[in-house]
Length: 184
Image 1 (cartoon, rainbow, N blue to C red):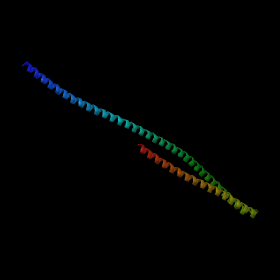
Image 2 (cartoon, rainbow, N blue to C red; image 1 turned 180 degrees about the horizontal axis):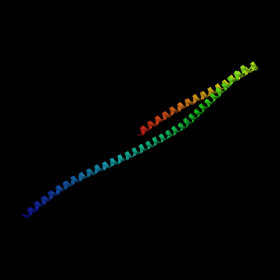
Image 3 (spheres, helix red, strand yellow; image 1 turned 90 degrees about the vertical axis):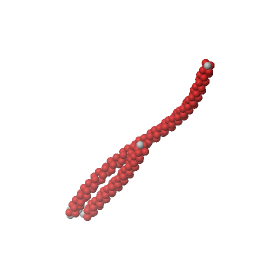
Image 4 (tube, rainbow, N blue to C red; image 1 turned 45 degrees about the horizontal axis):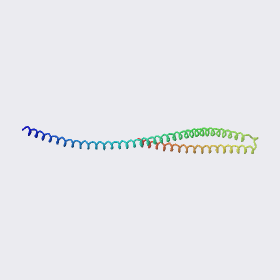
């Protein structure tokens, strides 16, 4: 009877051992599957991180290039502004010169008219002297008119250049705005 009991216990023990071994095999297989899955996931994560790092470097490089482009354009705008300021200054000088010449021309006209009146009223003045004064008046008037016309031409040219500079500034500002939008 003791022997049967021992056999029974041995059978129960063997049965439990088999169950434990089977359970161990299942757990081991599950562990290997989990390990493989984790290894695959870590590899995918590492690949994704490497890809993201490459993309970040590319984005950073693009950002730096855009920043450099914007800085270059800002420098160009600054240069254009300086040139425009110089042109505006020159234009103002020409306007002042034109005003001065007009004033001188008016004074000369007034003086010439006065001289002509005096010449006409002076009985001792000969017709040749009168013609000479009129020619002098006409020549002075033509010379001053020529100067005025040249200054007007210069003023128009500067005005056209100012317009072109304003268009260029506007174009560059639009381009900067586009670059700022694309950087954002």
